[in-house]
Length: 430
Image 1 (cartoon, rainbow, N blue to C red):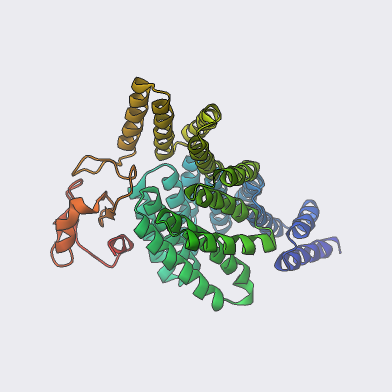
Image 2 (spheres, rainbow, N blue to C red; image 1 turned 30 degrees about the vertical axis):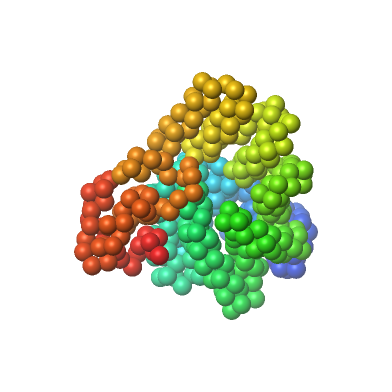
């Protein structure tokens, strides 16, 4: 009788979650969990709690539930459960910006799942996001290529949406804004069409990616000076997120609004948006997004011209967090902002040292174009990935691009033959 009641509580939690009564659902599952004797039921309930924690921005709770899942999987010696638990562990660590652990757990998820299984595709996606955090862009592209292949084999359109969206993130980080916008538009269009034809069981998941891709359109639009389009995108994403209490998207919308307001020189409004976003993101332990918000706030304070000391203090925190995450590109951008501050204060030697530090970090992150030896991602530019996954300024490999559709060319970096193909990487030239 007791176990039947426990199963009923789990089912009621699922109904509440479907009705978007998320906190009540979490309470149901949390109450039922200690009473469970069936290990498999306990595992699945922990899975519900893990996903609910992720969707509510409770990233540390997400990690705790994933750790409990892996203990059960080992106890039952079940590789299917192991692969699911390791995927949750990898996702939780990526969201907490513990990228090396995320990559390691992703590999374990791949190891314990059948070849070509959807879990492998999602594990490759987590690895891609983690390698973005570590600024290893060739590895990002390798993982995305594998994830796209699995998404096609399994006909998983939401996986493909995430591949396209992550590709946009790569080009955004490297400041190739037209490519970033093109990939994000494709991701959003696919998310919308998938949502239109999704069944009842997958509606919430599809709607989440419609919100996310809509939000992510705003940044490249803003950076290409389409402030009206950027504002419309972020407002639609904010309305959708607010209607169901999607705190992670709400917080990122605030950062995006701050960016738009700063670009339009509405500095006071921008400051308020950034400050609200930083508080929310730090509460969620989202170090990556909170650091981006801090950098936006620093730029705003410098534009105001009256808060240099405060900007320096916030920048020091952002740099410290970037170092802790191991994100060299973000560290470089902190040093470039510091160069601006030092130049204004007429500390010429220190400013030059800050610039040299930034340039060295671009070099350490393998972001110097092999042909021209200039950084990629320091200034807006067109970036090209070859099929070997190495990156160059597009103008530097124009000869290769003109010939590679009919004749194998050689990568200037690794000397491998690079022939245009139907692989994901080849799509980067479109």
